[in-house]
Length: 370
Image (cartoon, rainbow, N blue to C red; front, side):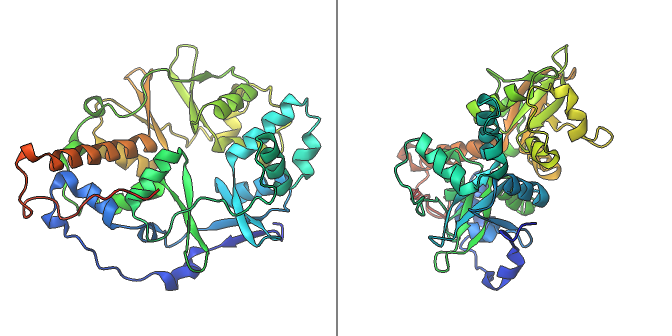
């Protein structure tokens, strides 16, 4: 591993972790509002994993080595450190790798040398020029959350900015603590799932709740070329594509993270290869299982599958494995937020007769400063 790559273990930040006295008593909260209270009264700091890593890459590191670092550490994003300004200038993600590969392909691979030798900083500067960004210093414009920000604010921010991850930065030391994601928030909630009162919708089925995407589904088949898959990922903000066979039945899933095998095997120069030639090398079919669900599955079952299978989306299928829709973690979080907003409207309506402070929720939903 290059000297320009630094891995920071959160275990080294254990001295920052202190016991927190909760402002709420879950036994006194209306079961319909318990998740909203949970997200409002827990912070990004509470959600920080006890064990994990933050990958920090020097902006002078070559693009190829940067993605080798992602593969080696099994992470989807890394922070970029700009030594000249002593600041972090952003993240490098799998989406960056996709954009680089498409640019090289469209240039008839005349820019493959750039992919091999150019630095992260050079790539970012060229990208900013292409997008008419006038700040050549790449100043510290990175968006982040404070450890004391509530999980509710984190969820709203992830949804509104349509991103999968946001850095959490200590306000005094400016140290990066970790990257907060939908996945991390859901796993944190799931730790307490059996201790919390259960809202009625947790036992409702997917067909009743209508969570997910059911129209205009984008699917690919085994003959789809890899370059076509990359263009779909570039054009549509999705993290995975279902793969169907000749009878339109689900036979696999190709995700953005699977693209990292191109960097690991250095086979990114051939993007005209069909998926059928590469899926076997990515997934071990002796152990690989598709993460699916049915319309009859209850919300609690979906949450359990998300956490236990450690996936970001579930493919909704019928008994014949034909695809009905897709439900993602972001869909689940949007459902929670929509439920919270609906409850807030009901509680604020004077016609509902719920003006007794002793019977109502013990928290107030305040506008998030985003």
